[in-house]
Length: 257
Image (tube, rainbow, N blue to C red; front, side, top):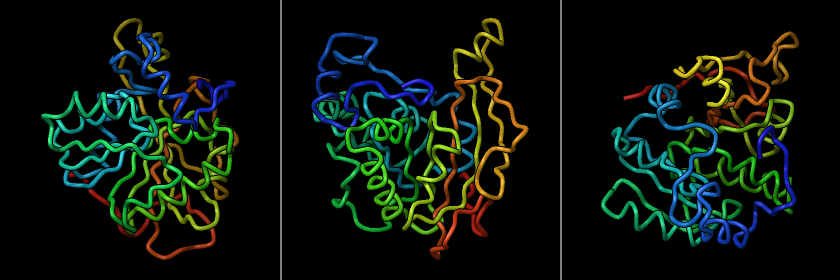
């Protein structure tokens, strides 16, 4: 799914992911192997610790077989609920993490999370799941359903933290769909491969905050260092619904523990 491109697979189908996680290919994260899309916890830690208190109730969308939740639990996070459409990977991750009480695993479709009550999470973390939904057979409707559910589940001033290949011109319009009211801050992070290349063997994760224009787009003179950079959207749920998204911080922000 690099560079925001979709392949012929239906990334919104349980059957596709069940087959992938049942395969023996390490490159696909199958056969009980573990794989992190996009960025590792070590690279994301400064931002996560600054934005998400360790006591937060966190929902991990499309957890797959990423070790992000495990690393967060080891770093002091207390309550992380992991969901994925694949029953295969959920069973794999339940078995792996059965001795870590901070982690819960549930098979669930992100387009329908009615199992959870309204405003029941402080943070929803999404590392590549919206990208997958934008490549599903029901896109963009399925992605819109997912985002509506995310907005419903977050408490006022809760955070939807989205890590994606999608630039603002592709992601801000769908984030600002009817029923979702956010204050959005954007960070841009080069891919690990680019960081390794530029550092000549000693990668140093770099993350740059970029001020969006009034209409939620990149400044016209902004140039990506890495054409395949990851875009990290910090979306605060506004307490009162507003007509438009704002590319600024809300009056109340959450500080890290």
